[in-house]
Length: 256
Length: 365
Image (cartoon, rainbow over all chains, first blue to last red; front, side, top):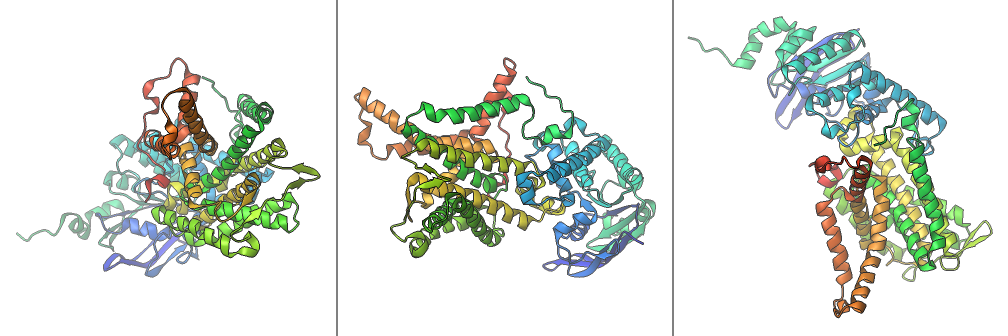
């Protein structure tokens, strides 16, 4: 069974159909990439899946459960984590604190227990920290553990955001342009992290990305979109060779 | 510089990092316990004021500093706390029960108001809470059976399990009472910040959208934060009622709300220390200014008494300079001094170059 099923999903902002009747499925354990020119509706799909936007039509089914009407804050506890295109970290906290906030969907204590700091709160805290440290080890962030986000280089911040998503122990991770703004070496590193996530952690990755070198390197399947509509679905090579995709990127070839 | 090695997760979770940290705060507590015996009863009263305003500041800090929700209406919650407390005491409730009830009542009032307020942010929230502060003056007059109308209420003497505590009769006992309440609330506050609830507040402050994506129920977090903030401020209001001996509709004017906000901003938004530093400034600075004026009047030919309102103007000027040149507040100054001492003689000038990051509270979306 597919892990994520998108069925004729649509949303319009005013008269603009940002996403128009898009359907696709993401299988467990695969890396699925959405590509397309700016304004194709890629990030909008992410915002729809994480329930930040209300779709006008269509269904989102995660692991057999219809999540189309779920409030945004309940999505994380199902096992969906995400990163943002423009890094949305908590700037005034340290890396470790950011990762601990990532554990929020796995919290077991309520605010009055927290105020009294009962033994179960301490037990839960230890567990949260253990998981956070595992993620720090996994992504090699130990050097930055106690640094404030505000002072970190861009590439590290991108990684911290992924780390924060991983601490929630997701099954599906949505990466919104993980390589944007990264140097060539950093993009290569990012490709390794993504492959590690798939192979070592057994995660399913749904990714939006422009950098075709990264896309063709890691993706199992690629969906190309333009102006809210799906154009082509297949392997990276197939999609890149598709005449409709080439047209969307380069414009129509003039008849000579 | 002290390097501290961590051996277990508990080293990070514990209240105190290590023994040195613990000893520092134990010393501070001892000073706080001994101080009233070294001062005249007038200054014990002033010190008690610092404690009460620290408590009120802590309340506002929770919502303004740690959750990013500016409130210009916290005097209203001090009023609710004070009136609830006195009304219950007058009806025969024992002091402790009335104090706890006043906190709970103010918390519930805060929760009721937080729902509609939670939809607002930035300048709109500031205006809405400001309105709250203005309305409460009228409510205090209209709700006469509870608040005593225009005349207000007088604080009955405190009978604390047989111990008579009175602000004038036994200022030290009242000081200790306030100190106990303040220490307990501070501990609860720290507990909150080192646990998931407090972290969710910080998350809401710094990025609502990613907080939501991480599973934080933003509306709920704001409500809990605002409500707890109000409860703390309500406790401060109840203690203030005993400190002032009488409260009426004029006790909690808008000016108090603004002073409270100034207090947390001067102290340093987003730090527990800030609430305390700010309280010291707000209570002590006007005192210091008037004493300085008297000193100038008596020892130099200049007569500053001829300029009415000068005290307030100087107070305002100092606060203005503070906000312009030290936006991180006194807590920021304190961090710098501490680092200078720890690193002596290796401190470099540019270490705390002011970076252009502001809390979202300050940015006023």
